[in-house]
Image (cartoon, rainbow, N blue to C red):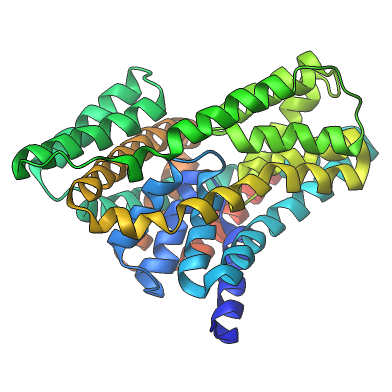
Length: 385
């Protein structure tokens, strides 16, 4: 039986994380590692890494799926629902308010531009998480080599799914060679054909012309949530293809504004769907689009979550998961480098990044206070400028 206080604690923690986790999936994972592993010790660092690796093998928003995994591990099936909903709700509510203001006044509120001060703080948060997670994930020279090759492949533009699959396969083959076993890896790769089949069905099923009613709106976002691997940039490509070019529900400029809101608000970038849903069908459209794009994440985690401990117990499959974990950190490091290039653009942002790193690494200041401080710096800079 799940203790009520555990469930309430899960709700409180993820509600706060959903309110303060700016900066995209890499930053969200970093903040969860700080809160769940370092501070509360709900999971070991190895367990946390296993869940990070697992989220990369299924479609949907990785950080939201990680929250759902953690909720399930902490408080069972009710925790699965509560953690995911609590993490999503703050961002969806903020985006809904901004969508209302956008429709009412015809432009985004100027305060959206004031979050530049948060970006360099996010870089420091992610760097700290990468440092700690790498100490756990890179346990051998072979895993270090796999990580280095994954970084190189990512920089060269290799598809992230191939990078993850390659990391897992390489580690599994090395493990099998050392132990002279040829254990099948069905438990690791079973998600790939299933999700590819979902992708084929989803894309084919959305081919006809449909009107902007609530059910068609729900169907479009359910499809996107069911088949989308990758970053927010991949989400933009899906939204542009479906909503701008094929269905003509929104304009190119409206899509860019929706993506901007998804980037500057905390929580999952997929709440871009909330903004688009409001533009298409008002408040009901916002709710329908949000439910549609996030619902598959709960479904995929519920299916894949019980497999993670079983994979870890198998020597070869566990080695494959180690390879996926290292490749995941490689992807995260490349994303962090790209974010740093756009976040640290002048003396002020450089000083914020350095000070944040010192406060995190040396004094272990709570990341919530650092995010709040960065937001204040951004607001002051916007007002002065």
